[in-house]
Length: 299
Image (cartoon, rainbow, N blue to C red):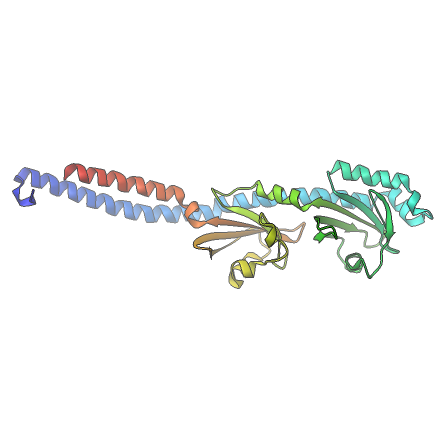
């Protein structure tokens, strides 16, 4: 039926309803933009920083516990006495038991101790050997550095990859190393979820990926390749919270980072933008659906 064929009363009603619907759409559009700004501000200044720093603190707690254990082992008076003075390293049963106690207490793969002056090296299985420059460059790189501790990824000859926590007495002879399964650490970081598909991973100070849900990325990719150089430079600032945006695959994502002082690494969070604003999109769809229903009712 043509609009001109309606009665004056009905035309007035339809005109009023159309005006109300138009106003509703306009208000809805403006409200959506304002709501998006509010949600974006809350997300980027409150919710995401709080969530990321919570994850950062959990990772830091896990690593700091192992660093403290490594410190205690390298400073153990009994252990230091044995590694300094023993003439029969293979017979140090009590030293080996101490290493096994540490291994079991912290659920480690390896617990080791070495004399950083002469390179004699023990783990929980006994005396390994006297380390040398040809096979054990990592040991001499560490002992010649000015760093008391280090965190590194090491791949064994059998293909097993481990996370190593090392500590050394800069003015003494003790050096200890504790290792965790890389799979265990990946499982640990994978427990942290962001919305539906957002996830976190760890990179070192150079931006090299060290712990990631995709094993193929570990040690083989850096932030500049995954995103771009500008994003990488933003994320690798030693702040409690950094944020940028990038296109990952075919969708836009919010990328954030938080510096972990104990490791000199970063926890990185990747969250699809559409998931961050999913609640707003749902509310907008409901408004549009309600408006269309009302419009169809009065047609």
